Image (tube, rainbow, N blue to C red):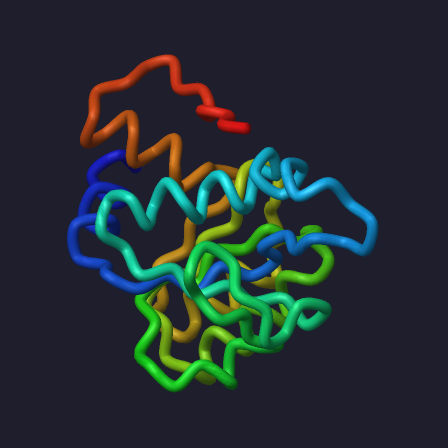
Length: 154
């Protein structure tokens, strides 16, 4: 598994991150910096990946310098990895969207797994990773950081 993940991370440049948190009304802006999806997004950007946020409730907003899109098919550049921060039961539909945009990898974050999404991805010849954090895997493989912890900045 480590070799597969290393190959994916080495050959990928663009990540569509589905479920990136946005700031809710009357919410302290510091809270956004502490949300796992935005921590992961910022981290991957710092290591050279272009991360496009996808969140239908924040369409048009800017998160970490990138415009938020409502759905995957609205993104007009090629996507290597579709990284999902949504509940497991939503992943089959997202897997179908990832297939439509010709993504190479469907990556479900820690705690997310779905057999139907896996079948959709594999039937489309996509690589499938589930129940793993892309940031932690990057840290483990390329920075030899273990154990890995998110760096929270206020």
